Length: 138
Length: 386
Image (cartoon, rainbow over all chains, first blue to last red; front, side):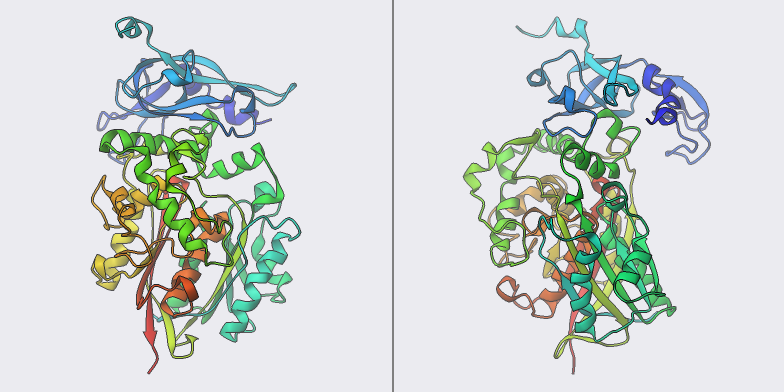
């Protein structure tokens, strides 16, 4: 069971907490020690809003160990409204109902479980941003 | 800086070698390479491998293989850079040879993907991706390629069928490669109907993960690979990019591949059209297109066009995957980079048989790790001995 690896990342997985570099202003997710833009220390925590849009997506039919139970599932590159791109699963949506540009919002869901008696790993997924969905044609 | 030549090559067939263990497989490539080079004891061994720890519970292949191959005591290490491990092992050998610290080196890439089957292999192979931020989200290697491919199709207005030429070319070339894993022709018309692995990447887009071993012997000073023909290592460059695709400045550009190809070409002073043959990392069709763009053989968003009208065929202006590429020769992980080098060397030494690209003098081999997070480019030159 990989308890500590996942425990360390709680703030990121449950709260989408990243960083803002106070040298160049770049917003980063996940947090890093060195800003990839200006190479200075990036130390100020920043909580992202969770709003974004689908930049790309793919429905996975060949799942890796730990994810077979939810297969097929759709994974996406989500462009957060503040700028960074994240890789995350989409949820509460038909695998066939996804489009590039679709508005999405972050929710916390179960990412995987390590067997019947193993640990549960939770983290961020993204679902269609419902208010935006209401204006799409029927 | 010393000149380095390839003086011996060896490889196994690529496939599912259920009866053969990792150490035996490596020896099957090492023995013919040492014999061809007439080298009994190389000064150092560089092993390219990515999966042995996860799949075969075996680390330290350097010491393991040195001992198993009758070379106990020899300096030996594994070099790992995910799918680029083979090319990275070659790079390390080259650095050691050029410095003069050693005079001969054995480079061996070996992979035993089939020591496990199923979802555990999918996960092991995906360990080249960012574990905390890509794999933990369920993103496998094909899924990451698919995210890139769908965005590529969206931004550049390319239809799925337009990638078909890459696997079709690869399979056509593999028909005459006895060591290739898949030797049947691929029907271009069936391409768009193939079963999905991670949409839009389908079975015809995706190279098979397999077992295989390939080896090279390198030496400083001159050394013939064939009577009258030498293969000189003219350029070598390794570069990195953000490991996670979502951290890259441009998701649709292989920045590491561009850096390493630009540097390698600069080292030789060659123009792009002087490259006679290229083994590129066609693990997924979209990676072949992006590699062509990164190396400067096509403009951004136009790499897919070379798969039309035979430009990449053996008689075309830039033959690629001349022995089947990753798609049809197969993709034995850390060994792939060494297979590419063996294939280019054989092209330049007129040893390619029915796969021969006529008059090939300059060849490029490039392998990628972690969806382009690492790229290693080598340029080889065929030289006639006077």
